[in-house]
Image (cartoon, helix red, strand yellow):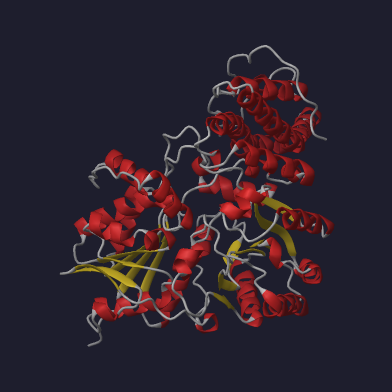
Length: 601
């Protein structure tokens, strides 16, 4: 009698923000549900990456199914599952092996909660963690949480397949590549697997897309990779930790025909026509990569596929003629890793590119009419005021604030576990002081996760810290307005314009459009006003004072020009699903107006 196939659950945990940090960017604590995000992206466009697909575990699922395993893929955020619902799903499936993929620090607490509860309900389930974050803190996880049986470091396809064999008793755990586990002598790290030949991997299972469709939601985009790895060693990036120690395969490319086969299948089977190329560097390196890109574009055009795609690229990988061909094939949105307009900052972060290359890349993207998504890191915990001023000057010269996502410019460097930036922070400031943890206590677990993942990295220069606090506070207000408040309002107004009150509804829609077009220029003006104020304090020899009042006066003047009756008054009556803005739209009056600089035009 044949044995039942091994049951494997692969989990993409939900994200849970660390809510006690007033300087955190709003993007890390979105208030809307996944359902609203999907519908709004399809309606209003621009940020297609918000509807995340867990491509890594979908590759693992396809690998395991090819070997006859029974696999359940659970994207907790995509499926609207809180921790209780996720645990119920896992317990009902009764997996022999459960894998949790940790891409981000925000997923850590939920993953630990679910893993602990699953282990208590099913002690026989083998629990393994993987992904960039788990790879970076593998030993720490095993030392701290006994319910985790092992961690896979780096790429997971070969490891998960052999681990499934081991769980079935068909091989020893010490024969599983890339595995970190406990032994009598302590924590053992086994040799990494040979980097996978990408053309031998099955196409990823699309369970996440199917689950979204099953909920009656639109799918804004499908994730897809045409390569793996990166040859750069930016200090803030987690990729170097994944490829560290590789002799070969640091950067690998797929056959363009196989990539287009996958695109064609996803479009046919799931009705998706937009793709997010989740490569670390889509355009790659050198002539071989350039030939691959041309072949990729030609294959799409030859098959007559009506698709669009967007990708992240390094500025030193651009070949104008290749971009023209890709543009013809549907490449319409590009995210450059510009990061900074300061040569000093770029050098500290080991970007391997210049400010001049950044400016040339922006010009080229605009010449090709590519929608430019600005990837800027305005400052880090070591930044001086001169570096911040140089980046603001770069934003002004290149008019990056004119992008569809100007608030992306308000971004400070996040210290990620396992990166060169984390090692530098440890050397200068000392390693995080981890508190005792009770994994069964939500508050205790949250405190431990926050400490373990560098959630508190205070800015050294007090004038830079005052600048950041004031800027981020106002940017968060605008971000909530644009991302949370206006989409449901626009839906209501569009419905009204089709029925009664057409004139008034259209006038309000136009006012919203004017605000969205204007906020980028206002943001750049606010940056300039605040950095000038910080500079004035510093050069006068004054200690750094809060700049919130300066920011509030600037924003009040800008908003009053567009909404003389007041923003809160103009938004009433509030649509169904309205989300109040933190810090309030209707906050106390700003301090008396001061002379304001001319807005950037």
